[in-house]
Image 1: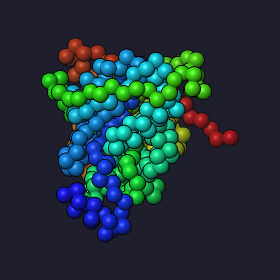
Image 2 (image 1 turned 60 degrees about the vertical axis):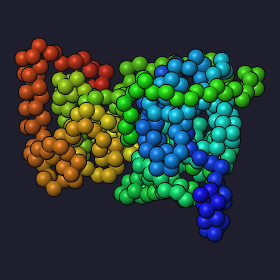
Image 3 (image 1 turned 90 degrees about the vertical axis):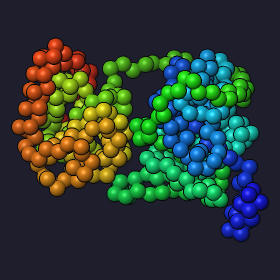
Image 4 (image 1 turned 30 degrees about the vertical axis):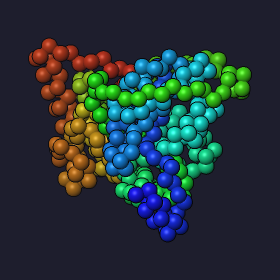
Length: 370
């Protein structure tokens, strides 16, 4: 089979990448806690590896993070590479990228995936430059062509988010991509699952690293859409910043947070930290209200994986209804207060006061253009 694949590649003028096999997920962690996107990528990586009949691998880097190697196995990894050292306690580009480069050279994975976080984007870019190979950023769909091509099909919205583009890396290995958090689903954690854990050495000593971490300031009270279970989002149909107060009341009654479409953010009605979509956060809540949101691709790519979507729009032909499990056609200024009142009534009836979500409710002030 290997000879047949090599022959087909040679006939097609392709390099021989037969030594590269497997899917590698780089696990991102901070203070010994893994980012959810890492387990989500392991879930998706499992599907890719199965189609390629190849192993699913994970790389865990840090200090005192051996428990994360076990967790990676529980979330689907067949083999986990663990690199622990004091100089790896806090993320720095150079020492982390050196570990990744050394492992890629030795393990030769055909696909390497990172979370599209600030750390993941930085690390993936540094590695792709050194290898060199291609890197697809902020993917929202992943698939592979079956052997013999084994090509990674990394897709993301393009042309102002009006269509999907699938990007291939035919001439280089490994094929690399960063993927948005909340897009893919993690496998159920199986603590009985067994896997191979291989310890590897750090590639740099502390005295060789120019950048020093003096302190790390944890920001508190910041809105975290990606972890929210209930989101009440508003769009252009609200007509201004004041109606977001209605959404904030509903979100508070439900114990959720306020989200927004790009149009509402671009209009200055609410801060960017509330934006859901391709240029905002990708979310996977249990309940998502889309209020006054038309349903453009830019937005739906960020919320289409919600368990339940409730759309409220006066236009019965709005594209958002194609994504909604429940739809209400009507005046949001009447419907939203009515829903809020009913939620409060039911919470009181069952003795469940609304959660305190003050930190998640935006300050609603109109800013005049100067």
